[in-house]
Amino acid sequence: MFSYFCPMKILISPAKSISKQDLSSTLEPTVGTFLVEAESLAKKLKKFSVRKIEMMMHVSNDIASLNFERYQNWEKPEVLTEEARPAISLFTGEVFRGIDAVSMSDKQMDFAQNNLRILSGMYGLLKPMDLMFPYRLEMGTSWKVTLKTTNLYKFWGAKLSKELNSEMEKEEVIINLASTEYFKAIDKKTIKAKIITPVFKELKNGDYKVIMTFAKNARGKMTRYIIDNQITEPDQVKFFDVDGYRFHEALSSDLEWVFTR
Image (cartoon, rainbow, N blue to C red):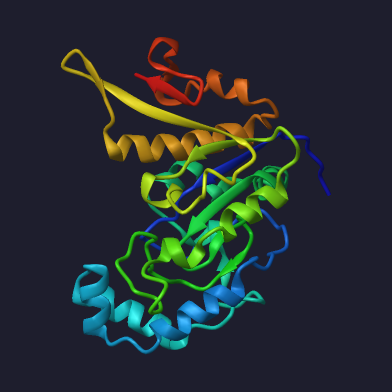
């Protein structure tokens, strides 16, 4: 339907909170790349008790019970159902509030589908319209998946970097808007692209500081800014001016772009 030249991939983290939202876009859902891996994780999680989930994920009994039920009912999300929905329509939280996917047109969603990737402890790497069954599994969860695979970073290993490399054109750039916890899943040594990490800071008591709630929302707002403006050159990201932020050249480096307000 649409075609774009965009030498960038935008990386974001998922959200802990999930709720069903109806999208304005009528684009057809897609199927994730790593469903075999997701299914293997789901089968292991299905064997866990509520108490085990509560302890492993450091969550309340209510949240553990909810996710126990999710794992018991988990199915490989290959077709659209009441439960299996596009990832971008399920995640909520500050980043996704900033993106506001429910208001995106087909043209905007198509651009996002081509250029936006969501890192996930369960699904590895998701396109916005990839179908996803609700879950809770943070990348940094202390879980010995197998005897030799002592955490999810090792489980995903080089898979995510290899997939990103296969999707990117020569000299394409990664705009890293993911959290530190999730971006650690990317093997930076094997990534062929230049990685630029925007950082958002607030002026407090004469000094610029990162305030996480604001920073998360700003990551979402910058993602939406790139989508809305159909940005095709990384340097154009420096013009981001939503919610009073401005690019601060003096505080920035080649690979870390600081935006302040």
